[in-house]
Length: 309
Length: 205
Image (cartoon, each protein chain N blue to C red):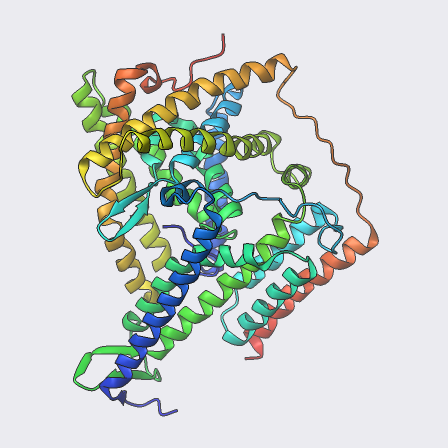
């Protein structure tokens, strides 16, 4: 490709590009909308505010990820993810993406949950994909595309490449999060983190906070339903914010009162600052083989990334 | 807005973890051990509250609420926000696993500041409380967005454009957050004023 001077494209190419992007957006909006309609049992559009997925619904299984010793699984997958986040080439990032899809298949997890994670990042990554090509400073050797009649609109291919690499890496890592967290009961994962040196108080707080999300979600849902019955509709005005402020205040008052009752109940059951851990850990040779090979693979990818391409 | 995986350079990722770990340890030490389980339970309430979407023109934004966390929890705010960030990352992929340190610092440090500012300004009347809350809630977002922009810019000058857009996108959020913080504090002032005292959570009998 000629890297000297901008490549000029006719104006209709820009319209084609915009049309294609618009089509993609429409398609994804339609899919997400259909999914939302299918999942919203009540058919109430405002209920989407309160949907919190279950973290470990696939916690029991017999895949290599499920049978892996949790401590080794967490450490090696985290190190692998850290290696992936340091990649800078499209080739190695794509390899990582394949590894991500492979792990989902090996762990026999539903792909839908991972796609949901990717769609959660869509807005953030979309910002990179749109903004970076237009704003990355042009350096010597960069290929720049301009459109006729619109010479102020410069599309830097290097910036686009950078944004694509970031997005591919982010998707690859997001795919690995499900095998990391969803392949064991959450309490066991937290216990493994405690055994790995995370302070026990923090682990307890993590478990408690996770547990009570679902309680307060239920509470907030009930309050919100009551507000709707009384005619509240969210609008773009100060009154909506005032009502939401009152709603939040009420939620907080109730939650602070509940924490007191929860704490009293814990004390009644003999809570003395420690939790009873129930999972026993036993690492076998196979666990170590999996862990070491995964970390070696991660380092290998990094080396490939730096010295090969 | 939460930073996803793969954006930050490795040194920034590691520095984020180090900074957040240090401040979280400080935050835990500054909090009465008996109160920590309660902080965890309140964290879930804030987590649920942050799922609320506020309409903004044709689109909608979700509440962030770091200012309110700071106002209500004081020094414990940082550990609360860190837990929230970890759970958001685990549950939704809002913010990447490798960016947990950076994201916790980005939201937690402004929350601590907001708590201090609120305590300085709140005075004794309802009006003063609301002004202080609006200032703390809005200022908190300003601080958080500045840290976000700085973290993005740490990736090199290629990221300058993205950092600018991120700041622009948050300008309306500043208004929404300061209004919601003021209204929430006004509600609490009338309904349960002891929550706004120095000891957000009353000690166990």
